[in-house]
Image 1 (cartoon, rainbow, N blue to C red):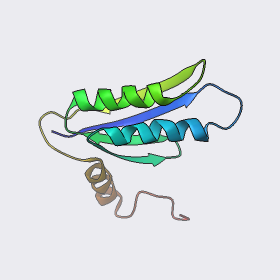
Image 2 (image 1 turned 90 degrees about the horizontal axis):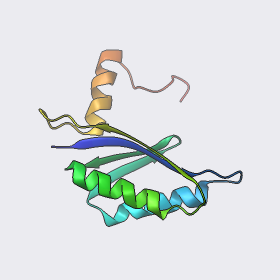
Image 3 (image 1 turned 180 degrees about the vertical axis):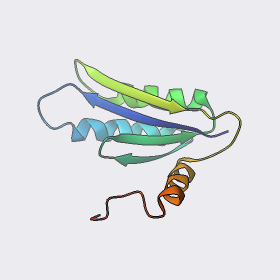
Length: 104
């Protein structure tokens, strides 16, 4: 089984969050997950929800601050094993083109 999630962890601060977000991403290295960071969060893939939750917890805990905002959206498809890239491929098949703007 592959569990796919979108994780967003950020300190609630006025200055740049990049350094703290980098700490959250680095914390994922301690777990058996694959991930890809994009401008809106980090897509994580894990074999189990236990591993996913542990990785998300570590990412949350890695961020310093008086207040930390974490959003975790999980897709736990239990009847079929499909990874994040396959989800994009299926959409692109329906579009008949890459799932990006034509200017990209």
